[in-house]
Image (spheres, rainbow, N blue to C red):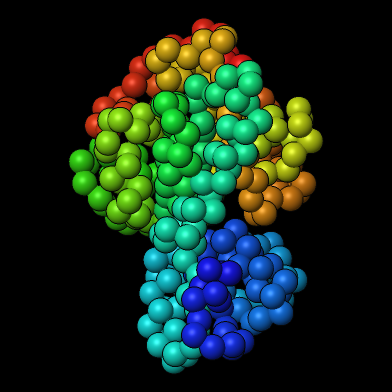
Length: 307
């Protein structure tokens, strides 16, 4: 947003517009409020009332349109931006400025861990791919570092995993996962390109909603952190799985990007525990796609890695 403001030819007070499943919209509204500028967030009907209340509380205007993020985004572009020539579109994931910002996560990790050895694995959630793109670009800036990047989704929102299995970019017919923050039915072209390049060492995995919510419970119980299923799925992929990525062991250094997410409450966490049960190993062979090609990874992890 600051980058776009700096690019304007003359001083102005533009209106920001963002489409989002929830979190990116909340971030836009919060940033716009800090700049004392107006914003409108368009979300799909799958966005929870909790997230809508949070966006309103951040002084954002909210419209609910369409069943998916793509439909909400199309409405924003065609019906709102087209009528406001001075309006600024804030993309949730598919823009180099977003990736550049996310790349600073890698700068922080590398700076803190350099003396003890850089991590072997970075784990992140994938919705449209903005976070993954940023991690890849951040890794490129560290000479000689070639970690595995574990890109995790929930089944029913696994647009990257399904694209890799198909060998081409595909659009999911809809989002059926409770992790609606991952609700991009199609990842960005750059995300698919990175994921299909073997030198990037990107491994894609999809877990179900039950596994994702158990990751949320684990993080709440052990670290006192309240996160939504879109984040909990990464914790489950590393800490609760009977099977993970080939070569992982007790000396493997793993960093999980705990992106958090605001679509969670104590009541929601309690409901997930009632619906899906308490903590236990989640396992079996998950839908997995390995390093630049479609396929199923069946690799055992006898000892959890150091996280």
